[in-house]
Length: 292
Image (cartoon, rainbow, N blue to C red; front, side):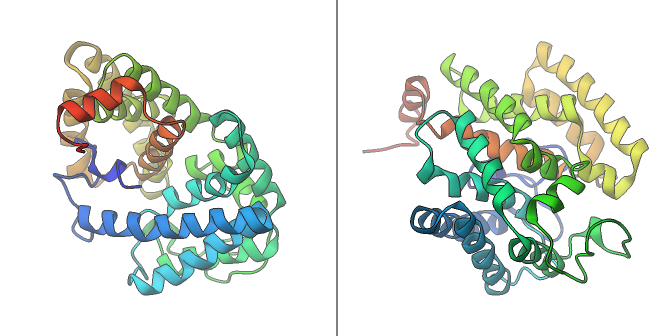
């Protein structure tokens, strides 16, 4: 949550250079620091009471965070937080790979009940993300009238969305993007450029469902085709140049691939979970990012 907002360029998104009218890099970094405390609290609760207790503690903590940071009506990075929460609660119970961690996180989600589901819907109702505003009819309770429903059922029934699909299916896209980051870091790439390539991979492979929900199917498919062209451009001119081209196209349209950014944040987390590769340690030391 700390690293992803800093990555630049990001088409239509907030970075250390670009901002939105209602939020900037400072909002994301403050959110990341505060929300990381909630993830830590969730991890501790999972250690003592099991992973479902951890998810419950993490959602309760975030509900308090919404009020404390004045986030009503302002969704900063709840998608990223939602993806990281089950992973955080699985850390005390995992001694294996990141793939094992993702499997445990999915098992944890499957154990969550109606109380956790209502907490999740309540948080969404407080944040009131723009793509959810308006009336709703369907198999789940409306976020505007939160009722108890199993958390896994919320994710499964809404799995057309990239974020919910990751939670329902065990993080397959995040894991694929994390493997790409790991390979690039091991080959000597810097973290930011590795993240750029991972973002291009997500956008060109899966598209972005936030664009779909806000602007419709035609916009989604157009963005996907433009991202695939950018991937081919990156092979010649590099990931940064390709993302700059997408940014020039998408930012004036108001297109913000927020779901892809959420997956990128998780991919970075999973890539760094075992510890930084030797090449990355050398990279950061040479540039004075890590002192000592």
